[in-house]
Length: 227
Image (tube, rainbow, N blue to C red; front, side, top):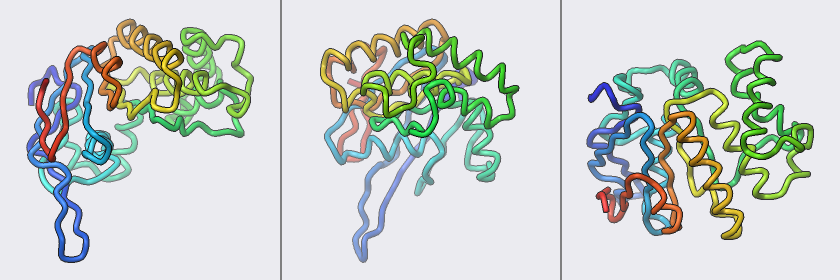
């Protein structure tokens, strides 16, 4: 693998078996992303975009092919090692924010650092700094149900970036937001991406968002092609 890649896959395939039928979702996907690069993956609903993201993030297992985080193939990792490396190398933002409602915005963002046994005061300081960068200085102690949809996604973005990952994988991060809020959230995400030099893979159906990214790929009939 190119040692400049932060994330890549080779001949990645995913097939589901339903009774006697085999459903090919992904077929021989090849993709690489370098430091500070942004790419969009577009495609119709059911085309396998989320499946591809889960495979790249080590959250699912491929039927064939390899995924690389940096120069290392994740196929050789145990689940425990994979989880540790995922926490250090990757961040995730989903359409549904997956924040913990019983905790504050600050506690949610600090959580990935606390999971790796970072000093609590240091974790909170880093979380607070990022929440201020995403415009939530006045929402630090608010619990998640007290936040608007756009605010929740900003918290999710801060949480994904607090560990300073090599790459952030995002699945329809603005899919639940109105257009104005979606554009605002996207602008915040790209501004932080550029400042922190983190790579982003963004799965989206929104052409306005995909055009803001460095490269665009179309996933169709199990094949990924640059457009």
